[in-house]
Amino acid sequence: MQNLSTMKSNYSSAKKSSRTRRYGATLGTIAAAAALPLAGGTAHADDAPPPSRVHALVNFEFSDKYLTPRGMIVQDEGVVFQPLVLGFANVYADKDSFINSATIVGGVWNCFGSGRLASSDSGGADKTSWYEIDPIAGLSFGVAKNFTLDVTYTAFDMQVFNIPFSQHLETKLSFNDSDYLKEFALHPYFSWWKELENKAVANTDASPKESYYFDIGIAPSYTFEKLSLKVEAPCRVLLPNEDFYGTGAGAGSTVGLYELGLKGTVPLKFMPEGYGHWSFHAGARYMKFVDDNLKATQNTSETWQIYCGISTFF
Figure 1 (cartoon, rainbow, N blue to C red):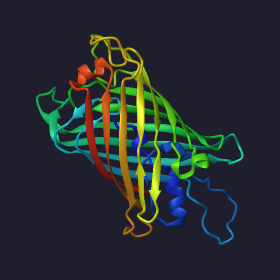
Figure 2 (cartoon, rainbow, N blue to C red):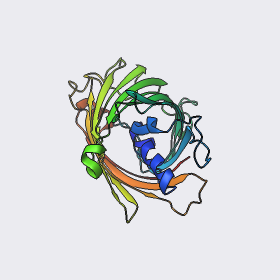
Figure 3 (tube, rainbow, N blue to C red):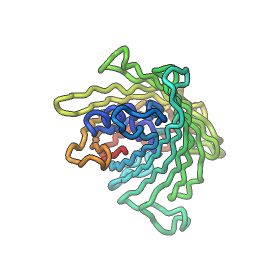
Figure 4 (cartoon, helix red, strand yellow):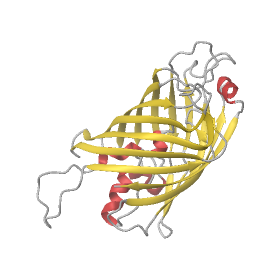
């Protein structure tokens, strides 16, 4: 499954945009999900209805390969289509508290491809264009004004290559440094990703065991207001446990891989009001594999991915 940091909506941007220009849902991180307003019982001066505390994101993404955040190249032929649907329910908000908001997140992610792969249901006898379906569930907390803590459960239900069903938990702490660096903010984050049941990656060991890794990254961006263009340059480093990719091809490396990317997002202004806040994005990412075991399982030391997509935020 793709990294949720690149698929979930940046709620603070979407919320601000919906109040002002009625468009502009952007793809990015769930870091500000808990910033959604909590509907209260206080009447508004203009008798407008209270703001909704239930929202949804739908994202349709196309790419030249299925590349996971852990460096697994599942498919590199044809076109890959990855739809995502997420729902958000803001259940608590108090801007004066240390924990200033709480949001429940749930959804599902799928992966399809024009290139057919060996089907798990047939034991490899037949091929399928449906690669994977993953449920998603989590909580997001706004902490001390500029921090967000996300705890997310995911499961990978692979439909190809007889890959076992696996479950995982990610804990991510993000910092919004916009108050200090303004439009040149870096938006740093740190996460811990743990396999709970079965492996989520190919492994060079004969009997691989569940393991974990850390992610450190930044997601700087700049918006060209006259063009309504937001440009992002995310980059990150994956730091795996010594046996995450196995030890059969050599000792595990402190750095598993690093990734550099560039993405542009523009609002689709022609969409009528009341049908969500639509946007189009396109970008590229480069991954350099450092760990010898990762390189052994993927038969390469680097890869590129080109992608584009359309998203809407309600």
